[in-house]
Structures are given as structure tokens and as C-alpha cells.
Image (cartoon, rainbow, N blue to C red):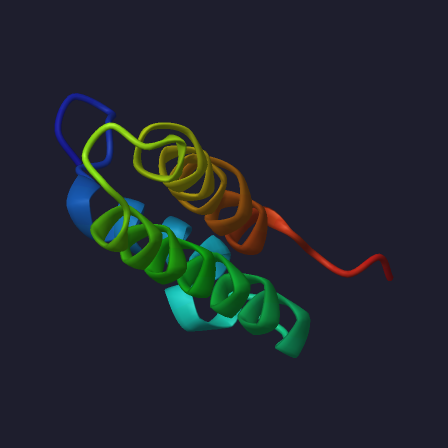
Length: 89
């Protein structure tokens, strides 16, 4: 004690406090088979989008409209849904 105050090892005290509430990534990662299926659909959509883009003519509707739309849906819609989706309990 110094001047009536008890000296505390602050980093050790904080470490003990957070140890009770700390969760590891794997414990909080609630990926179910539905998540993996949705993720696989997104990856498949992306792969097919690149194939469609590569096989079309440079100025065709296939390369300019369809393939970018498939890539957008895969990257921006389906993959994030797979990461965010959780089963209702």
C-alpha cells in the first residue's frame, strides 16, 4: 500500500477480467451445412460467370451483361449471405 492505495498489477487484473468473457473464433463460428451449401452456390456462380465471360465475344450480351451480373450476384449477394446466415433456434 502506498498512501492508503493498494498497488494493483493492472495488466494482470485486466487479463483475468477478460478471460471470463473471451470466446475463441471457432466457438463463435456457427457455420452449418446450410452455410456451406450457400457458399458453394456462390463459388459455383462466380466460376460459371468467369466461364461465360471467357467464352463470349468481346462485345456480346453474354460478356457485357450476363457474366458481370453472375459475378456480382456471387461476390456481393450470395457469399455474404452464406457468411451472415444463422439458423433460428
